[in-house]
Amino acid sequence: MNSLSIVKGDRVRVTAGKDKGREGRVLRTEPPEERVFVEGVNFQKHHTRASQKNPQGGIIDVEGPIHVSNIMLLCPNCSQATRISRVREDGVAQRVCKKCEKPIDK
Image (cartoon, rainbow, N blue to C red):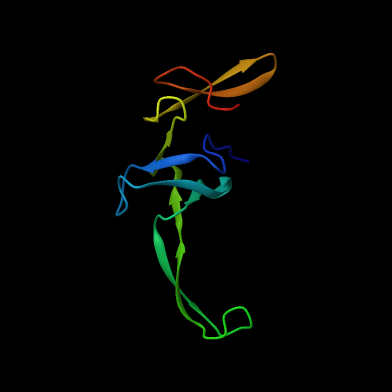
């Protein structure tokens, strides 16, 4: 099982592709495929059938997956796109910002 350094709820910036430079919050992750879904980024058209929830049916926009190599975490402390290192303290692994060297996890 792969583990990602990006987790649900992190703020990220897209670094490559059609949405380069956009920022958003991670909605969900798929570690085996190394992909994440980011709020407001990489919209795709989905054709939906009429249902009770959506009686009209039609075409809706939904966020699509982005490869984890095309995003960078925004540090909550220094507000910059940064890489992440993992530091183990007292048997607990913490993510640490490479730029300001402060822990990202609370």
